[in-house]
Length: 372
Image (cartoon, rainbow, N blue to C red; front, side):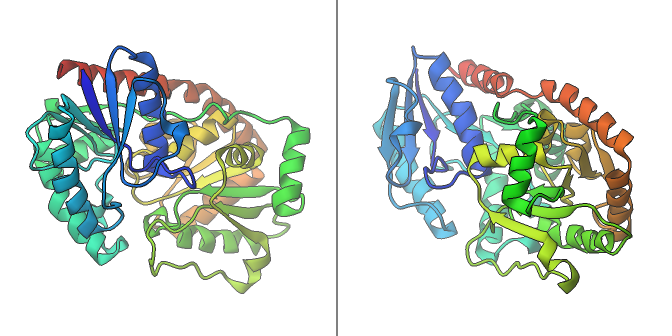
Protein backbone atom coordinates (compact mmCIF):
# COMPACT_ATOMS: atom_id res chain seq x y z
CA UNK A 1 0.00 0.00 0.00
CA UNK A 2 1.24 3.51 -0.81
CA UNK A 3 0.34 6.06 1.88
CA UNK A 4 1.03 9.77 1.37
CA UNK A 5 1.30 12.03 4.40
CA UNK A 6 1.24 15.81 4.74
CA UNK A 7 4.45 16.41 6.74
CA UNK A 8 4.80 20.16 6.21
CA UNK A 9 4.96 20.82 9.97
CA UNK A 10 8.01 18.62 10.54
CA UNK A 11 10.45 21.51 10.92
CA UNK A 12 13.97 21.00 12.26
CA UNK A 13 14.28 24.55 13.58
CA UNK A 14 11.12 24.71 15.68
CA UNK A 15 8.34 22.21 16.34
CA UNK A 16 4.93 23.28 17.58
CA UNK A 17 1.63 21.47 18.15
CA UNK A 18 0.89 20.14 14.63
CA UNK A 19 4.56 19.28 14.19
CA UNK A 20 4.79 17.22 17.36
CA UNK A 21 1.51 15.45 16.59
CA UNK A 22 2.80 14.58 13.11
CA UNK A 23 6.14 13.43 14.51
CA UNK A 24 4.71 11.17 17.21
CA UNK A 25 2.05 9.55 15.03
CA UNK A 26 3.88 9.24 11.73
CA UNK A 27 7.12 7.91 13.23
CA UNK A 28 5.15 5.03 14.76
CA UNK A 29 3.24 4.32 11.53
CA UNK A 30 6.45 4.04 9.54
CA UNK A 31 8.36 1.95 12.08
CA UNK A 32 5.53 -0.48 12.84
CA UNK A 33 4.52 -1.06 9.20
CA UNK A 34 7.71 -1.55 7.15
CA UNK A 35 5.77 -3.61 4.61
CA UNK A 36 4.05 -0.45 3.34
CA UNK A 37 5.45 2.52 1.41
CA UNK A 38 5.11 6.03 2.83
CA UNK A 39 5.47 9.22 0.80
CA UNK A 40 6.13 12.35 2.85
CA UNK A 41 5.07 15.66 1.29
CA UNK A 42 7.19 18.57 2.57
CA UNK A 43 6.78 22.18 1.52
CA UNK A 44 10.48 23.09 1.98
CA UNK A 45 13.86 21.34 2.35
CA UNK A 46 13.55 18.70 5.06
CA UNK A 47 15.77 17.36 7.82
CA UNK A 48 16.86 13.75 7.30
CA UNK A 49 16.01 12.96 10.93
CA UNK A 50 12.34 13.02 9.89
CA UNK A 51 12.82 10.19 7.39
CA UNK A 52 11.90 7.46 9.85
CA UNK A 53 12.70 4.39 7.72
CA UNK A 54 13.83 3.00 4.39
CA UNK A 55 10.16 2.69 3.40
CA UNK A 56 9.83 6.51 3.27
CA UNK A 57 10.12 8.57 0.08
CA UNK A 58 10.42 12.31 0.84
CA UNK A 59 9.04 14.74 -1.74
CA UNK A 60 9.35 18.54 -1.63
CA UNK A 61 6.39 20.33 -3.24
CA UNK A 62 6.31 24.05 -3.98
CA UNK A 63 5.33 26.65 -2.99
CA UNK A 64 6.01 26.69 0.79
CA UNK A 65 2.51 26.59 2.33
CA UNK A 66 2.59 29.18 5.07
CA UNK A 67 -0.04 31.68 3.88
CA UNK A 68 -3.74 31.22 3.02
CA UNK A 69 -3.20 31.91 -0.69
CA UNK A 70 -0.30 29.44 -0.74
CA UNK A 71 -2.41 26.85 1.13
CA UNK A 72 -4.72 26.79 -1.88
CA UNK A 73 -1.87 26.39 -4.37
CA UNK A 74 -0.21 23.65 -2.30
CA UNK A 75 -3.24 21.50 -1.54
CA UNK A 76 -5.34 22.07 -4.65
CA UNK A 77 -2.54 21.95 -7.23
CA UNK A 78 0.78 20.60 -5.87
CA UNK A 79 -0.73 17.91 -3.63
CA UNK A 80 -3.45 17.08 -6.17
CA UNK A 81 -0.88 16.42 -8.92
CA UNK A 82 1.49 14.55 -6.59
CA UNK A 83 -1.23 12.15 -5.42
CA UNK A 84 -1.80 11.19 -9.06
CA UNK A 85 1.88 11.10 -10.03
CA UNK A 86 2.91 8.81 -7.18
CA UNK A 87 -0.19 6.59 -7.48
CA UNK A 88 -1.14 7.09 -3.86
CA UNK A 89 -3.73 4.81 -2.23
CA UNK A 90 -4.51 6.95 0.86
CA UNK A 91 -3.66 10.53 1.87
CA UNK A 92 -3.28 11.22 5.61
CA UNK A 93 -3.24 14.84 6.80
CA UNK A 94 -2.33 15.41 10.49
CA UNK A 95 -3.24 19.13 10.34
CA UNK A 96 -6.69 18.62 8.79
CA UNK A 97 -6.06 20.25 5.40
CA UNK A 98 -7.06 18.16 2.37
CA UNK A 99 -7.14 18.36 -1.41
CA UNK A 100 -10.74 19.06 -2.41
CA UNK A 101 -10.06 18.16 -6.04
CA UNK A 102 -8.56 14.73 -5.37
CA UNK A 103 -10.67 11.60 -5.64
CA UNK A 104 -8.46 9.27 -3.59
CA UNK A 105 -9.45 8.38 0.02
CA UNK A 106 -8.31 11.00 2.51
CA UNK A 107 -8.07 10.93 6.32
CA UNK A 108 -8.17 14.28 8.08
CA UNK A 109 -7.16 15.01 11.67
CA UNK A 110 -9.31 17.94 12.85
CA UNK A 111 -7.98 18.93 16.25
CA UNK A 112 -10.55 21.60 17.07
CA UNK A 113 -12.79 24.31 15.62
CA UNK A 114 -11.58 27.29 17.62
CA UNK A 115 -11.80 29.51 14.53
CA UNK A 116 -15.55 28.82 14.28
CA UNK A 117 -16.23 29.92 17.86
CA UNK A 118 -13.65 32.70 18.31
CA UNK A 119 -12.86 33.94 14.79
CA UNK A 120 -11.83 37.32 16.15
CA UNK A 121 -8.72 35.72 17.67
CA UNK A 122 -7.20 34.99 14.25
CA UNK A 123 -5.73 37.24 11.55
CA UNK A 124 -8.27 38.12 8.84
CA UNK A 125 -6.97 36.00 5.95
CA UNK A 126 -6.35 32.93 8.09
CA UNK A 127 -9.83 33.25 9.57
CA UNK A 128 -11.46 33.53 6.14
CA UNK A 129 -9.53 30.55 4.80
CA UNK A 130 -10.33 28.26 7.74
CA UNK A 131 -14.02 29.17 7.87
CA UNK A 132 -14.42 28.63 4.12
CA UNK A 133 -12.36 25.46 3.65
CA UNK A 134 -12.72 23.42 6.85
CA UNK A 135 -16.42 22.64 6.34
CA UNK A 136 -15.40 21.40 2.88
CA UNK A 137 -12.50 19.36 4.33
CA UNK A 138 -14.85 17.76 6.87
CA UNK A 139 -17.28 16.71 4.14
CA UNK A 140 -14.51 15.66 1.75
CA UNK A 141 -12.71 13.42 4.26
CA UNK A 142 -13.32 9.70 3.96
CA UNK A 143 -12.67 9.57 7.70
CA UNK A 144 -12.06 12.22 10.36
CA UNK A 145 -9.86 11.63 13.37
CA UNK A 146 -10.11 14.05 16.27
CA UNK A 147 -8.43 14.28 19.66
CA UNK A 148 -11.27 14.47 22.19
CA UNK A 149 -14.91 13.59 22.65
CA UNK A 150 -15.55 17.32 22.99
CA UNK A 151 -14.11 18.02 19.53
CA UNK A 152 -16.05 15.12 18.02
CA UNK A 153 -19.35 16.50 19.30
CA UNK A 154 -18.36 19.99 18.14
CA UNK A 155 -17.54 18.80 14.60
CA UNK A 156 -20.82 16.85 14.39
CA UNK A 157 -22.87 19.83 15.55
CA UNK A 158 -21.04 22.56 13.62
CA UNK A 159 -20.58 20.79 10.28
CA UNK A 160 -23.51 18.34 10.41
CA UNK A 161 -21.21 15.33 10.02
CA UNK A 162 -22.44 11.80 10.73
CA UNK A 163 -21.12 10.45 14.03
CA UNK A 164 -19.74 7.23 12.55
CA UNK A 165 -17.45 9.21 10.25
CA UNK A 166 -15.43 10.54 13.22
CA UNK A 167 -13.05 8.56 15.44
CA UNK A 168 -11.51 9.88 18.68
CA UNK A 169 -7.84 9.23 19.45
CA UNK A 170 -6.57 11.09 22.52
CA UNK A 171 -3.13 12.66 22.29
CA UNK A 172 -0.15 11.46 24.29
CA UNK A 173 2.98 13.11 25.67
CA UNK A 174 6.71 12.56 25.28
CA UNK A 175 8.52 10.17 27.61
CA UNK A 176 10.84 13.06 28.45
CA UNK A 177 8.15 14.36 30.80
CA UNK A 178 8.70 12.70 34.17
CA UNK A 179 9.27 13.72 37.80
CA UNK A 180 12.62 15.27 38.75
CA UNK A 181 14.69 14.74 41.86
CA UNK A 182 14.80 17.71 44.21
CA UNK A 183 18.42 18.52 43.37
CA UNK A 184 17.46 18.75 39.68
CA UNK A 185 14.51 20.99 40.49
CA UNK A 186 16.87 23.36 42.29
CA UNK A 187 19.13 23.48 39.22
CA UNK A 188 16.19 24.35 36.93
CA UNK A 189 14.91 27.07 39.27
CA UNK A 190 18.37 28.62 39.51
CA UNK A 191 18.50 28.78 35.70
CA UNK A 192 15.08 30.35 35.07
CA UNK A 193 13.96 32.19 38.22
CA UNK A 194 17.13 32.73 40.27
CA UNK A 195 16.07 29.90 42.55
CA UNK A 196 12.47 31.00 43.15
CA UNK A 197 9.50 28.60 43.01
CA UNK A 198 7.18 29.33 40.11
CA UNK A 199 3.85 28.89 38.38
CA UNK A 200 4.24 27.74 34.79
CA UNK A 201 2.31 28.36 31.58
CA UNK A 202 3.13 26.55 28.31
CA UNK A 203 1.46 27.35 24.98
CA UNK A 204 1.31 29.70 22.03
CA UNK A 205 0.98 33.38 22.93
CA UNK A 206 -2.47 33.55 21.42
CA UNK A 207 -5.67 35.18 22.72
CA UNK A 208 -7.55 31.92 23.33
CA UNK A 209 -4.80 30.75 25.69
CA UNK A 210 -6.14 33.46 28.00
CA UNK A 211 -2.79 34.78 29.22
CA UNK A 212 -4.13 38.28 29.83
CA UNK A 213 -6.60 37.08 32.47
CA UNK A 214 -4.08 34.66 33.91
CA UNK A 215 -1.59 37.48 34.41
CA UNK A 216 -4.27 39.74 35.89
CA UNK A 217 -4.99 36.99 38.42
CA UNK A 218 -1.26 36.54 39.00
CA UNK A 219 -0.84 40.26 39.73
CA UNK A 220 -3.57 39.94 42.39
CA UNK A 221 -1.72 36.97 43.83
CA UNK A 222 1.53 38.97 44.00
CA UNK A 223 -0.35 41.62 46.01
CA UNK A 224 -1.20 39.09 48.74
CA UNK A 225 0.88 38.69 51.90
CA UNK A 226 4.12 36.82 51.32
CA UNK A 227 3.63 35.56 47.72
CA UNK A 228 6.01 32.64 47.22
CA UNK A 229 5.76 31.99 43.49
CA UNK A 230 6.94 33.77 40.37
CA UNK A 231 5.61 33.05 36.84
CA UNK A 232 7.36 31.40 33.88
CA UNK A 233 5.76 31.59 30.42
CA UNK A 234 6.97 29.31 27.62
CA UNK A 235 5.81 30.01 24.07
CA UNK A 236 5.81 32.32 21.09
CA UNK A 237 3.20 34.04 18.94
CA UNK A 238 1.16 31.54 16.92
CA UNK A 239 0.72 33.79 13.90
CA UNK A 240 3.44 35.92 12.33
CA UNK A 241 2.63 39.63 12.30
CA UNK A 242 -0.08 39.08 14.92
CA UNK A 243 -0.99 42.19 16.88
CA UNK A 244 -1.63 40.18 20.07
CA UNK A 245 0.58 41.49 22.85
CA UNK A 246 0.73 41.16 26.62
CA UNK A 247 1.05 44.25 28.78
CA UNK A 248 2.37 43.40 32.23
CA UNK A 249 1.43 45.31 35.34
CA UNK A 250 4.44 47.29 36.55
CA UNK A 251 4.27 45.54 39.93
CA UNK A 252 4.92 42.07 38.46
CA UNK A 253 7.33 42.76 35.58
CA UNK A 254 10.35 41.53 37.52
CA UNK A 255 8.65 38.26 38.51
CA UNK A 256 7.34 37.12 35.10
CA UNK A 257 9.87 35.28 32.95
CA UNK A 258 9.26 34.76 29.21
CA UNK A 259 11.45 32.00 27.75
CA UNK A 260 10.18 31.95 24.16
CA UNK A 261 10.32 28.58 22.39
CA UNK A 262 12.32 25.87 24.20
CA UNK A 263 13.72 22.50 23.11
CA UNK A 264 11.60 19.63 24.42
CA UNK A 265 14.18 18.43 26.95
CA UNK A 266 14.34 21.88 28.56
CA UNK A 267 10.57 22.20 28.55
CA UNK A 268 10.27 18.84 30.31
CA UNK A 269 12.65 19.99 33.04
CA UNK A 270 10.75 23.26 33.48
CA UNK A 271 7.46 21.39 33.77
CA UNK A 272 8.79 18.93 36.34
CA UNK A 273 10.36 21.68 38.46
CA UNK A 274 7.24 23.89 38.49
CA UNK A 275 5.24 24.13 41.70
CA UNK A 276 1.93 24.56 39.82
CA UNK A 277 1.05 24.35 36.13
CA UNK A 278 -1.51 27.00 35.13
CA UNK A 279 -3.49 26.30 31.95
CA UNK A 280 -6.75 28.20 31.53
CA UNK A 281 -7.53 28.64 27.81
CA UNK A 282 -11.16 29.35 27.03
CA UNK A 283 -11.08 27.00 24.03
CA UNK A 284 -8.99 23.88 23.54
CA UNK A 285 -9.42 20.74 21.45
CA UNK A 286 -7.27 18.68 23.80
CA UNK A 287 -4.46 20.38 25.74
CA UNK A 288 -1.29 18.26 25.51
CA UNK A 289 0.47 20.36 28.22
CA UNK A 290 -2.04 18.95 30.72
CA UNK A 291 -0.78 15.43 30.02
CA UNK A 292 2.83 16.64 30.19
CA UNK A 293 2.16 18.16 33.61
CA UNK A 294 0.44 14.99 34.84
CA UNK A 295 3.38 12.86 33.70
CA UNK A 296 5.68 15.09 35.77
CA UNK A 297 3.45 15.01 38.84
CA UNK A 298 3.01 18.77 38.67
CA UNK A 299 -0.27 20.03 40.26
CA UNK A 300 -2.61 21.68 37.76
CA UNK A 301 -4.89 24.70 37.77
CA UNK A 302 -7.07 24.26 34.67
CA UNK A 303 -9.86 26.08 32.92
CA UNK A 304 -13.22 24.33 33.18
CA UNK A 305 -14.37 24.70 29.55
CA UNK A 306 -14.32 22.65 26.32
CA UNK A 307 -12.05 19.57 26.39
CA UNK A 308 -9.94 20.35 29.47
CA UNK A 309 -12.03 18.51 32.11
CA UNK A 310 -12.14 15.49 29.78
CA UNK A 311 -8.33 15.40 29.74
CA UNK A 312 -7.43 16.34 33.32
CA UNK A 313 -10.33 14.55 35.05
CA UNK A 314 -9.89 14.61 38.83
CA UNK A 315 -6.21 15.57 38.55
CA UNK A 316 -6.77 19.35 38.41
CA UNK A 317 -8.35 22.22 40.30
CA UNK A 318 -10.71 24.05 37.94
CA UNK A 319 -11.61 27.70 37.47
CA UNK A 320 -13.80 29.81 35.18
CA UNK A 321 -11.37 31.14 32.54
CA UNK A 322 -13.51 34.26 31.97
CA UNK A 323 -13.56 35.24 35.65
CA UNK A 324 -10.32 36.84 36.89
CA UNK A 325 -11.48 36.72 40.51
CA UNK A 326 -12.15 32.98 40.28
CA UNK A 327 -8.78 32.38 38.61
CA UNK A 328 -7.10 34.31 41.45
CA UNK A 329 -9.08 32.53 44.16
CA UNK A 330 -8.16 29.08 42.83
CA UNK A 331 -4.55 30.09 42.16
CA UNK A 332 -4.21 31.46 45.67
CA UNK A 333 -5.92 28.42 47.19
CA UNK A 334 -3.72 25.92 45.38
CA UNK A 335 -0.55 27.88 46.13
CA UNK A 336 -1.18 27.63 49.88
CA UNK A 337 -2.76 24.16 50.14
CA UNK A 338 0.13 21.68 50.09
CA UNK A 339 -2.13 18.74 50.83
CA UNK A 340 -4.14 19.57 47.71
CA UNK A 341 -0.95 19.95 45.69
CA UNK A 342 0.21 16.49 46.77
CA UNK A 343 -3.21 14.99 46.05
CA UNK A 344 -3.34 16.44 42.53
CA UNK A 345 0.24 15.36 41.89
CA UNK A 346 -0.56 11.73 42.74
CA UNK A 347 -3.79 11.75 40.75
CA UNK A 348 -2.01 13.28 37.77
CA UNK A 349 0.70 10.64 37.71
CA UNK A 350 -1.96 7.94 37.80
CA UNK A 351 -4.21 9.54 35.18
CA UNK A 352 -1.32 10.18 32.78
CA UNK A 353 -1.26 6.43 32.07
CA UNK A 354 -4.48 6.86 30.06
CA UNK A 355 -2.67 8.84 27.36
CA UNK A 356 -0.29 7.13 24.94
CA UNK A 357 1.02 8.03 21.49
CA UNK A 358 1.27 4.28 20.79
CA UNK A 359 -2.47 3.92 21.32
CA UNK A 360 -3.21 7.03 19.24
CA UNK A 361 -1.05 5.78 16.35
CA UNK A 362 -2.74 2.37 16.45
CA UNK A 363 -6.18 3.99 16.12
CA UNK A 364 -4.92 6.03 13.15
CA UNK A 365 -3.49 2.92 11.52
CA UNK A 366 -6.71 0.97 11.86
CA UNK A 367 -8.53 3.72 9.96
CA UNK A 368 -5.88 3.71 7.22
CA UNK A 369 -6.03 -0.09 7.04
CA UNK A 370 -9.80 -0.01 6.48
CA UNK A 371 -9.20 1.92 3.27
CA UNK A 372 -6.81 -0.65 1.77
